[in-house]
Image 1 (cartoon, chains in turn yellow, cyan, purple, red):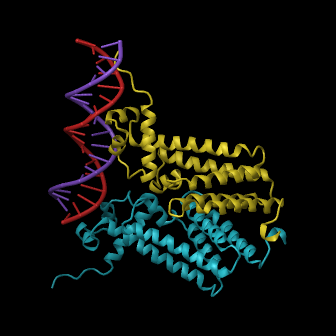
Image 2 (spheres, rainbow over the protein chains, first blue to last red):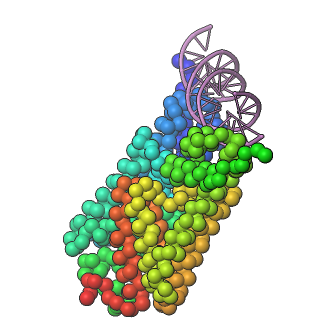
Image 3 (cartoon, rainbow over the protein chains, first blue to last red):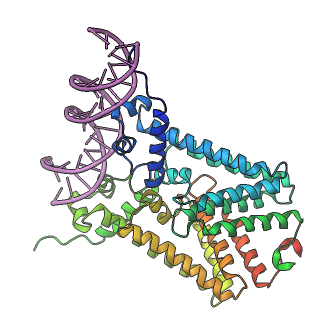
Length: 199
Length: 199
DNA sequence: GTCTATAAGCCGATAGAC
DNA sequence: GTCTATCGGCTTATAGAC
């Protein structure tokens, strides 16, 4: 038979595309740029991904898998303790925001570029945010506090804030304040501690 | 004499452009779309704005003026009280986030679309964020608390969070939690009150 | 309305494994 | 030689600008 397809080509293309999409924005990156950076021809790219939309969907899918795994890993040490899990979740986001090259949240950025997108990438992006918000809601509910809705809103607000502030200079600086704030909010709500100022 | 330029044409074009840019994103809106919606000819638009970049810069400039005025108005009742001013500022953002058609912060959205933009629009956007952050820093400093940097970071985080969460379903729902949280943070830090749970 | 640049997507041409 | 992965130029649509 004829030539075998080179192994790992698809992954290389996705990695290149993901890096470019994340760094410069989806609309700003053309297929040619991806092709140049990946060092391949057009037919190879279009053979693996029938359209740019498909490629973007894959980019978000891959990003989501990676982030879900990070979150899982971060929460692992928390065991069954929902308070520890919430802090670990926040700390993981804060850690990411301190990484060099952090440009904010890929899903929030995508939705800022395509506000009306109900196609595959848009659904992946909104789905991620919906699921993560649900995860926070679930953990807060397990805390058994008096006002779970308010506490969940506040923790979510803080997570949104880390991602929002991260795309700009001063990136991860907010992280530590965010993590300690979540800790204090949980301590206050569960009555298991006092704020540092009152001790 | 020839006909006089119609009064308010420039304003009408800007208003149309601003609405489209904000709703759909800057990159997604073409000059033709603006021309159609404004009901004017191409030469009229290009007569007032030599390029799309200029038009976008004007859009952000107008938006900034409006937002600065809103903030001023909101903080007016606070008088010389920095704590009240910070709460008013947060409440104003929360109020905006509840308006129908709220799609997040125009400046943050712009920077998500053009992460490497150091041209006129990019500078207006970053400038607004820098100035607003400075405003928060200044107010917090006037509170005379022990750790102004941490408190300022936290309040900023909350403001970022409102804007971040607002571009999606569930928009302004976070607002009330955000405002009360800022109040509590200030009360705690200044020692002028206790959290509701400990009272 | 027209011109030009650029982007997405397509297809003939090339080349390497059998 | 044949067959297929891959390459790079080509076509068409659209956007900015005059």
